[in-house]
Length: 177
Image (tube, rainbow, N blue to C red; front, side, top):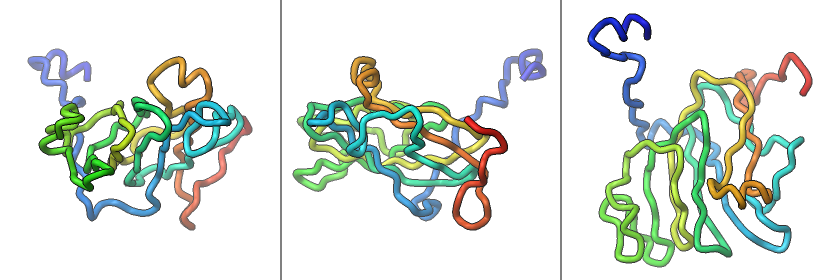
C-alpha cells in the first residue's frame, strides 16, 4: 500500500469485492433471526452467551445467510470482518424480490441486488438472503443487531472463522480461550 501512495494514489489494495454467483454457494445456509421474546433479546432463539460459539465458519467458505426479524418492527443486522452481497430480499406477504425495485412499504430495498454491505436493516415481514465469503481472517468476533441497546441486552452471537480440517469441520485451535 505504501507504493500505491507514491504512485498517484492508485490504492490497488482497495479493489471492489468480486461478485458471488448463485452456483458459488455451498451448504449449509446460515440463519440470523432477530427476536424480542420471553427470553429477552435474542438471535435464533438464544440470548448472547459469551462462552458459546454460535457460528463456526470455514476460512475460504462461500455461504448464503437468511436474515429475518420477528416480534419487532426490525433490526439492523451487522457482521464485521466479512461483508456480504445482497442476493435477494423477499416480501414475505407477496413473495416478491424487492431488491431490484423496492416496494411501496419499504423503498429502502430498491437497487440493492448485488450490492456489498456490512449492515442491513431487516424489517419484519421481509427476508433477506445474502452471500458472503470468509477470507483473510481467522479468529472470533460477534455479529449483532446494530441498535446498541438491543446488542447490550443479548442480541448478538459469537462467530469463529477457522481453518477447514478436511472432513467438513474446523481444525481445533492451538490455544485455549
